[in-house]
Length: 572
Image (cartoon, rainbow, N blue to C red; front, side, top):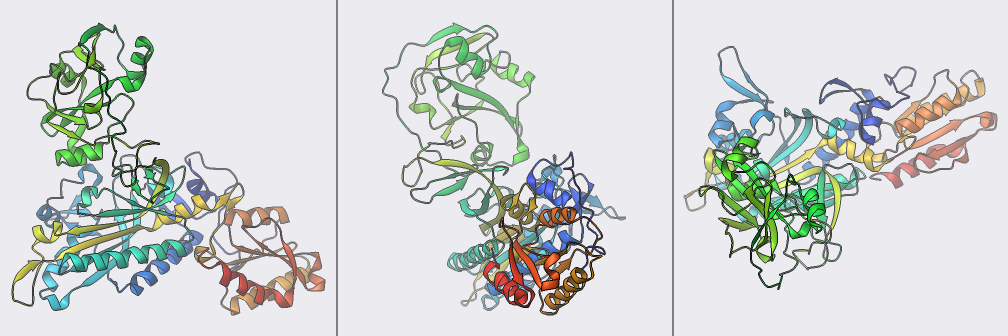
C-alpha cells in the first residue's frame, strides 16, 4: 500500500477529548474517528489491526476445538425475561420495539441466545461436550463512555460458551479456554496477570479475569508476590490484620459541632482515621441498609450486593431525607446506636475486632466514643465488605498484598446451570435420565485488547506495535522521491517485499523527511527501511521501531534480514 493512496488523516496535536495514551494515539495515528459519544469508526489502519487480533483469536479458539457461528445482535425480550435478566442490566441495555410493538434489545451479551440454541439442538449426551463462539458487536449504553474504546457503548467481543454433561467436563473445557486465552494474549504481545474475579450480572461459580497492568486501568488488582495469589478489587478477600486486646471503656457522647467527615473528625479530635467506624446509609430495593466499616476503609459495593443477593441497580446511597428519617440527625452523624429497629445492619468483619472506636451518635453535632461491637450494638450480618489495600494480608499465605491498576481484556466464568436451569437446556444421559447441561462462558474484548497493547507499547513519538498485530510489518521511507536512484530503489524493495508476502507500505508522498519519520514513528510500524543518499551504492538503513538506532544494510540482504526479524518478533 502507498501512503499517498491510504486514508491516514494523522493529527499533530492530541485531541482535547482524549485523556489516556491509547485514546490519544488511536486518534492521532488515524486508527479511528469518533462518530458519537462512545461510538467509533475504524479507519483502514485500525481495521487492519482489528482484523489481525480477530485472526489470532479465531486461530486459538479453533485450535482449542471451539466452533464459530454468528448470532443476531438483536435479541427478543422473551429470552432475557425468561432468564430474569431483562431488568438486571437496567439502563445500560439498549431496548427497542418493532412495528408490532414486540420488545427487543441490542445484545449486551449472549448467554441466553446460545443457551436457547443448545436447548433446541442438543438432546443427547452423545452431542456433548461442545464449545461454540462468535466475534460480534455488543451494545451497552454506558452512563459515562470514556477513555476511547476502553469504555464505549459499542464494542467488538469474542464470546464463547461451553456445554458439558458434568462439572468435571466443565473443568476440562474451562482449562482449554484458559490456555487458549494465554496463547492469544501472548501472541498479541501483552504482559498480563490472571486474577480471581466476581461474576457480576453474568452469574456463575468461578470467574477469572485476564488483566493488563496499566496505571490508566479502571480495575484495581490485589496480588501477592510470595504465592502468586491475584484478585480484582471486587473479589479480593480482606483478612483481619489484628485483634485489639484493649479493655473496653465506658461509652461517652461528645460534642462535634458541624464536624461531619472523617477528615474533619480526625483534625477536630486529634486522632487517626482508624479510630473511627463510619456508618453509611444505603437503599437496597425497598429497604434501608446501614453499612459499617473502619474509618480509613472504603465499602466494596460488589461484595455488599452479593451479600444482599441483589443487582447493581438495586443499591444506591440514601438521600438526605432518608438519612434524617432513619437516624434522626443530619447527614454526617449516622451511627449504629439508636437506628430505627427495621434497619438492616451490615458490618465489616474488621469492626468486631476493634476497641473503643468513635461513631456517629444519630444526633446532629454529636458522636459517641469508646463504642464496642457486641456490647453497644450488633449487626444482622458480619462479613468482608471492604476494599483491599496495600499491605493487607494475603488470604492464601498471609504475606502483604500489593495493589496495582489494570485493564480487563478477558474474562472466563464457570456458569454451571445458572442459565440452563431457567431456560430448560437439558440432555438425556446414557441411562435415559434427563439432566441439566453444565455451562461455561468466555469473553474477550477485541477493541480493548488493542487499546491495552498501545498502553503497554508506546513512547512520546507514537505507537510501537508488536509484529503480530501491526497494521503493516514494514514501512519504506524514501528521503527524496524526486531523486531517481532513491525512488527506483524504494519501488524495487517495495515490490520485492510484497511479492515475498511481507506486508509493506511505502511513504511515496512528496513531503519533508522529518514529516515522514514522524509519521512512521506515530504509526508504529515495526520495521522501517530508509532509502537515502547511499541508494546509488545499494545501501539502505534498517531500524526497528522499538530500538533507538538504525543500521546500514546492503539491499541484497534486506529480504532475508526482514524475514528473520519478523520470525524473531512474531508474538512480540
